Image 1 (cartoon, rainbow over the protein chains, first blue to last red):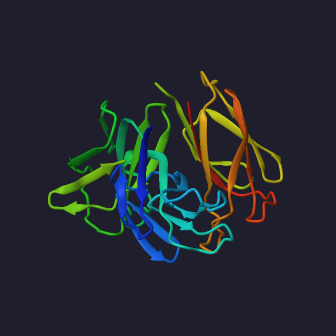
Image 2 (cartoon, helix red, strand yellow):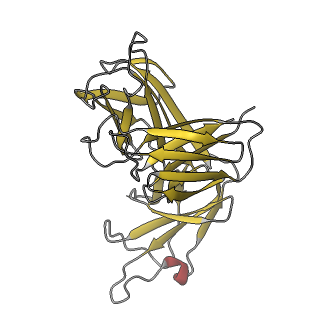
Length: 192
Length: 96
């Protein structure tokens, strides 16, 4: 498991005062900021935030920050005064979450739809490919294969999957959307 | 060298995502009891914010406090803007 930690000190107008990089900020309304993560997390991250740099010790300790919306690709921050009235306020935040799984190995499976024989997995027809990648981190592969039996191109009608086996032996399956017909194969498969 | 434990916790005290290394259970309305699998060497610093209320209609005063911290666990309280304890989703980072 590889952790991504993004942090930023954000001015009241939504500009980035200082940061880890890896995100953008938009001041989408009074007291509302949307943070877009450049590289999405694999799962929803934990996001913590506090108002920063109000400018005087006259600030109320109840001038808080909440994160009402968080997803793998963005988080929405709201700021305001101690009465809950939204106001643009400077804040600092940290978003931490799972960025990638260390890949022990992965395998490509194709599930052709043949006339009269729907949903027969290639692995059951003797087609099986496994590539071992012992280097943890992201991987991009181009896979060319000779289909057997003969492959009938039918873009959009064939479900392709990749099984990712992480270092714990756990398997996660992802669909593959990029398919090329000449030569037959899969290209630019991103292994998260 | 410090250790970081983090989690995104749903209002019902289930773990949405996390670093692992802790369990969490409800200790009552708006009270969450976190137990670290391995004790920190010293009292960790814990920061937490309400996450995933579900709409931007949430009050920014809907806060989180961590009134009890030890090397082996912490108690987190959540609630509404009036200080009334309510079960709320939150994210936290414990570092120590």
